[in-house]
Length: 327
Image 1 (cartoon, one colour):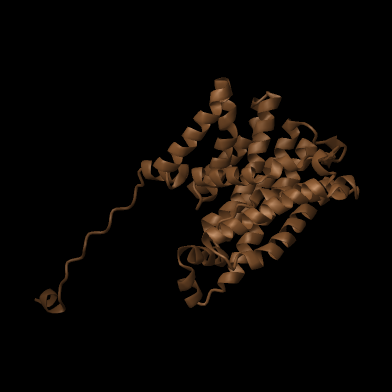
Image 2 (image 1 turned 180 degrees about the horizontal axis):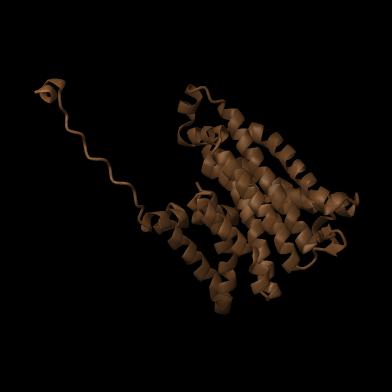
């Protein structure tokens, strides 16, 4: 195991100990929420950071996963371990259906199309009372169980959210370092050149959209069984903008940036609570400053500040001829 893999393993192990050192139930709730938001932002990072496609509908897929899992558990009586993957499948299916026509657009046209889709989804949540219970939302969503142990506290549920996040990071890492990831990068840099090289641009753009929707659906199912209550207000256009800001602040082209941005912007409002009515202004100003002075995100800034030690180039060999050597 190389040094980098060892450091990652140690960091993952250290993070697994958080519930043992963090005893505040409120802070554990915020921590669990940050981990779940990180899953959503990783999915958005695949679409925007890897493939270069703008979407403002990530909260819609977040809500689709939450409602699908909640309905499967409360109405159909399925176990959360089954209903959460069911929510992912529903999100993926809808993402594929929406992505194919939407991703024939690009730029601000694509952004407008995804905004419209997100608004439609929220209206369905509000008005489909027979299915979603309308504005009142769905309550009494059951928590998952491990045998006879109910994961109904923020301390125990941390490991559900953390496990889902680790799975999401692994999948995103495998995608990024695969042939699919290289195709995404080519499309992000120049769609015309990618198509000229034989890449099926539409296919890979839809695939990126489907992956993003699947990650959103996974996070939605996980958070539904944590909060045990969901309502349409949590899946608005505003939430999609927050997910986008999280990605941009952390660094859109990296998995580490997506996780960092999600965790930072989930905790930042909590640290600014003592400012009371002024905290929104300070929060907004902090985000603007970070966007202006850190265009590559926090991860990009760290990479510029930390010196990279490279092996010095080998000294050029002196050109000699066989005639000179023989002399």
